[in-house]
Structures are given as C-alpha cells and as structure tokens.
Length: 352
Length: 279
Image 1 (tube, helix red, strand yellow):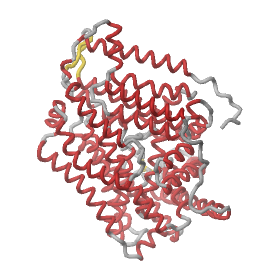
Image 2 (image 1 turned 45 degrees about the vertical axis):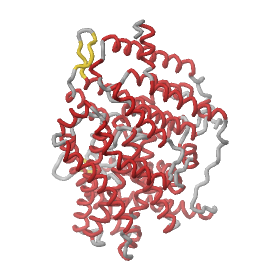
Image 3 (image 1 turned 45 degrees about the horizontal axis):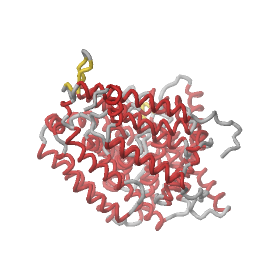
Image 4 (image 1 turned 135 degrees about the vertical axis):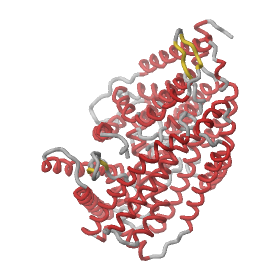
C-alpha cells in the first residue's frame, strides 16, 4: 500500500507533498486553536500505539489468514480528524525514515492515501452519520467496516493513479485497478473489524477515553473545511478521471501511447499542479525545501525528453559505451567509498 | 501497514523494530558527515531523490553516477553497509511487485548484447530497481548519519510546523515504551495460548484495547510529570551550530553534481572515452 519513491515522478510527488504539506499546516493551526493541553502527549502515544498494534494479529473469521489494525480510522475516532491526520502523517514519516517504507519523495502521496481519506472523508461522511454516536453496537461496527473499506479503496485508487501519472510502471490503469481494489476491499473490511473491536472494548472499559468522540457528538460541527477538502479531492479525481475516460478508453492502448510521447501526460496534471503550487506558495510550508528545483527538474525533464525518448535508436555502440561507462563509474564510486571509509568508530559511547 | 504481506514481512518488521534503536546508535557516532548540518543533508538528499526520479524510465547508465552520493554518505559516515542493505531489501516488495509487470507489458527490443535481445520492459524494470536502491539507500543513510532529533530540529528550522515536529519527537520517544508494552503482551499471549495461532477478534479487541488504555495512562502520567517541570506544549531542541561554510559547500557541491549528472550522461561519456568510440 505504501507508494515507493522508485515508482513516482517528481511532479506527482511534489504535487502531493504540497497538498499534504498545506493540510498539515492547516491541521496544526486548527489544533493550536483547540489545544487541550494533554493532547500533545496523547497524540504521541497513540502514534506509538499504532506501531505496536501491528505486532499482534487476529484470525479473520472464516478464512485462514490474519489481520491487524491499520490506523487511520481508529485514530480519527479517538482524536478527531485534525489531530488524527497529524498523527497519521507522523507515523508514516517515521516509517519512511526508519523502515524505508514508502520514501521521502512519496511521503506526500502516502500521507494523502492513508491519512486524508479516513480522517477527512470516511469519518465525517460515513462513520459519524452511520454510527450516530454509538460505539459498542453492531451499527457502530458496520459503520467502522464501511468507513474503513471506503477509505482504503480510495487510498488504493490513488496509489494506482499516482503510479500511472508518474509513468514509471508500465502497468495499465485498468488491470492495476483490478489488482489493487479487491485486495484493499478485503483489507479495509479487516481494518474495520479490528477498529470496531478495539473501540467497543475501550468504550465499555472506559468511556471517558473517547473525549474527541464525545465532544464531537455534542457540539455541532463546522463543515466548511470538510467541504473544501472534499471539493479539492473531487477536483483532482474528476480532472484526472475525465481525462482518462475521454482520451484513453483502453488502459493498454494508453500505455502504448505513452511510450511514444509524454507531452500529453504533463498537460492534464499541469492545471492541478499549478493550482496546488499556488496554494503551496500561500501556505509556504518548507519554503527552501526544493520545490523550486523540483519544478525546474520537471521542466528540465520535458526539455530533455524528446532527445532521450525516441529510444529504439539505441545503437550497439552507444549501448556498449553505456554499459562500459556504467561499470567504470560504479567501480569509481566503490573506490571513492573505500577511500572515504571512516575509521572504525570508537565505541566509548562518550562522543556525541 | 504492511498488512498485504505475509508472515515474512511481519517477521522482518519485528526485526526492524529493534534496528530503529540501532539506527539511533549509528547516528550518535561522529564523522565529517555526521557533523554536517541536518538541513544541508536533508536538502541535498531531497535534491538527489528528485534528480534520480526525474529521469525517463529507460535510463540506467545515466543513473549510475548518482550512486556516488549514498556511497559517500555511507562510507564517510562509517555506516555499516551490510545492515543498511538488509533494510533496503525489507522495503523492496512493493516496488518489486509493480515493477515486475514492466517486462511483461513492454516487449519492444531496444538493444542487442551479444545473442541476447533486451526489451524495453526489462530495461525499465532494471531502472526501477536501481532507482529503488538509490532512493531508499540515500534516505536511510540520511537518517542513520543524522538521527531523529537533529533531523526533526533541522526540518523545523526549514519550515516544518511546530506542532508536527513536536508530534514526531513525541512519537519517536514513545515508540520504544509502547512497543515494549506490546511485546510483553504478546509474550503473555504466546505463553498462555500454547500453540501459536492467531487470536480471535474478540480477544484481539480487548488486548488491543488494554494496550491502548495502558498507553493513554502512560501518556497521562508523562504529561503530568512534564507539566510539573514546566512543559508548555513545545519540545525544545538544542539548536545546533549555524549553517557554516562546509554546509554551504556540501549543498552547493551536491546539487551541482546532481544537475551535471542529470544534464549529461556521465557514465556513457566515460564509456566512450574508454572504448574510444568518440562520436
């Protein structure tokens, strides 16, 4: 489910970075306004809990396999959307840093796929209306299953979309979809079951542990940010989907077409990309953090492509020189590595 | 998160657990790379990943010079290459699975090497794998020679929202505590359940619920302790030294190298030089 850096183009990665970055800034502001002072350690501990929860499995009734808690939905139920989104983002960041799950360029995509949908789509639009403030009933369990399944389906859909827009995998849109959606439907149901089981236990054992849930059940909620987020998602979805529908009815055909020329790929994203870049300029998260170089490189790529892409023109001579040169460079890199090799570290532990 | 995978992945995850701590240990060492400013390393690493991923999908030889960057980080930083590679392998399945379709779908011949015909799909598959190794390696090396605290402090000074930085540090600090709790719980279950089999949903729910409540209690205690020491909602990280000349040099040199290597295929230039086929 984690997007990998190796499958993503800088344009796609940068777009989702900008979007999730803006969303994090927005959530951070929201949290500042409503900060219950014990929220900070609670968010930290719940993030750690999501990690730990993945160590224990339960058997899925009726099948031989097992599953475990994924995270997004239960965090939202416990903390509310804004805090949950930030916790989910932090969990994914730590996974990218330490497990190489996902990657740095794909981090925006991963936070979007796994954090945005449960917190800002499935929870407010599905879980809350269906569960109606109940937590330990069959109705609540059904709501959790539906919400988790929908958010995972949306996440999986975006994994496919991001992969396709990046154009590094050859997988046709349709078949990749057929591969991903059923798997994630199953995972989503399992996630919903696990979420419902834990939530119902917590509510029975200690109802006051669900302050976010109790609060949100009492106070009428401001729906505006939700709709903004939803419209944005719809715009991305609609723009991309309609483009797919109109110009490339067949996935395979499209992938063949894409091999021959890539300009078509850049234009449809351009609109969204520019809009998001505008948003990003306003919110100015990580101002020095290389979005400029990113765009520059994207253009650079477009410029370089026409020369590099008509690749059947690879002659034996150039490919041999490529291989030889590659090997030599590799050897040079190895030698550099050996030359720079740090002396075995002193293990006195006192150095900092 | 890695639910799609099977037992192997989970096992690997459990192993990886402990190695989070090990990466921290590597980060506490001292080397010229460790001494660079975290911001400089973060910027250069992001530039590296963007440059690597901006290549068209059939390029391999042009990507080879880029390996210099993670090699330098690893060797000059004194990081254990073997363990880094183990971590890279653990992360491989998704990129591998998606990339593996390329050879099946793109069967145009692009090159002849002796009797072998190489199709575009194999070429792009190899390219995906190589990029995967490059990007993951660079990211892991960055964390391993910087450490969570300095990295987050650096990112915060680059504009990461304070709330998010605090959240990252808290999460990181609690990870081991809560994981220990989880491990103890799992041990208890294993001892009592006898045969190793997965739990029923009901038992799972109450176990996880307990873990959750215990974690929350722990958070509450920690929070009270922090309040009594004057905590005001923000973690203060020791400010490192200002951005100095060698950091500028590192950023400038690194980015310049990536731009040059992106614009010209250095590997094939070297190759032309050696094989004498100057065109």
